[in-house]
Amino acid sequence: MTKADIVDVIASATGLTKVETEAVVDGFIQTVINAMKEGKNIEIRGFGSFKVKKRKGRIARNPRTGQQVMVDEHYVPIFKVSKELKHVVDENLKKAGG
Image (cartoon, rainbow, N blue to C red; front, side, top):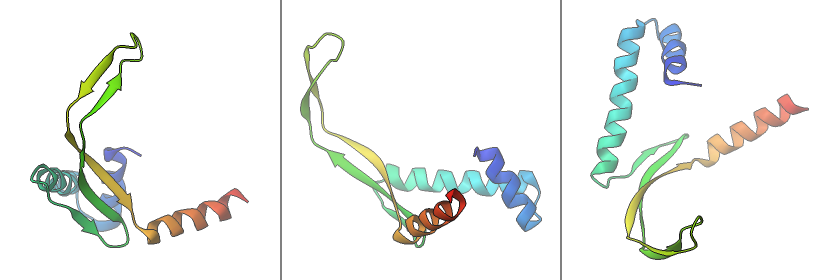
């Protein structure tokens, strides 16, 4: 499902125009990005949480040459799914799958 598909579904369900809905979806995404850039965590109950995790520096290996390479410490965005969402997806797909 693409962002355009999400906009279509929300626009149909709310009665908003696609332009208005796209502005809301873009606003949500930009808010999440800006919060994570500041190192903030975002929790949406029943859906999941967006967090920023610090990865330590380490020595890695270039798979092509085998040469050792130093990877500096860095931050990565993480999304952790809520237990409720995991359960709903699992139960629904079990029913659909047989």
